[in-house]
Amino acid sequence: MEPTFSRDVYSSPTRQLAVSQYMSKVYLWMTMGILLTGFVAYGVSTSEEILTMILTNKILFYGLIIAEFALVIFLSAGINKMNSLTATAMFLLYAAINGATLSIFSLIYTSESIQSAFFTTTVAFAGLSAFGFVTKRDLGPVGSFCTMGLFGLVGFGLLSIFFPSMMGTTASKIYGLVGIIVFAGLTAYDTQAIKNMAPSARDSEQFQKGAVLGALKLYLDFINLFLFILRMSGDRRR
Picture 1 (cartoon, rainbow, N blue to C red):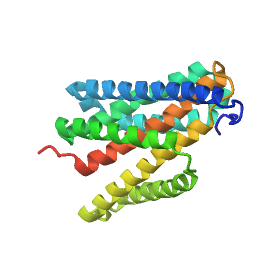
Picture 2: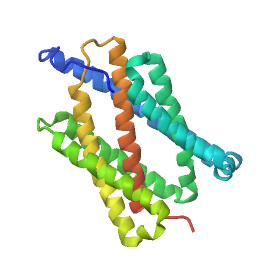
Picture 3: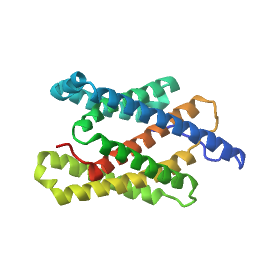
Picture 4: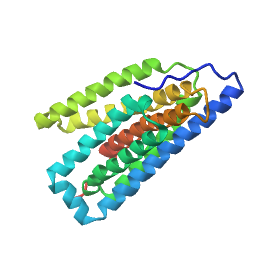
């Protein structure tokens, strides 16, 4: 359940200024989350002891995965019941834990591939989010289509864990391509949706919590887009 925001509080140009300030805060928190994730991922990947501990201790590894899911669910569903400080702390904690789990990709892909995928993702995300921000076309149908695609990706991914043969070379490429398309669409859609839900008071708790929740959505779009681009274009270590 998300905070209830008013769409028609401001009349242009006052509303435009309010939306601009709101989106600036959303992008600020999203960027801070991504930087924190990158910092933690780099720190863990360069520490053989920590990386080995995560990979060899199943309780720790799966505990981190479960903690990530729990934080996202709790933050999304319970944000109306918490204050902005708690919401911000939970988002940053999630970003840090995500960095720890993503560090394992440093063992799979070369550092050059990871850097290239990150740069490509940054450029693509900026363009897609900008489109979602400025377009006057309703992206609701795009969001619905991509959400269905997301469920398909999750379902196929879970099945491939139990039936590895499903994820053959061709299927893996199609899976990666669909993933890029889905999160590209969600990036534009979520940006528009967040923009349209600008809260009525710029310095209120609702404003702060809404910005954090919006940042979480765009953060998830960015990270997943990055992972699918890395999957499709990354050079694996030999």
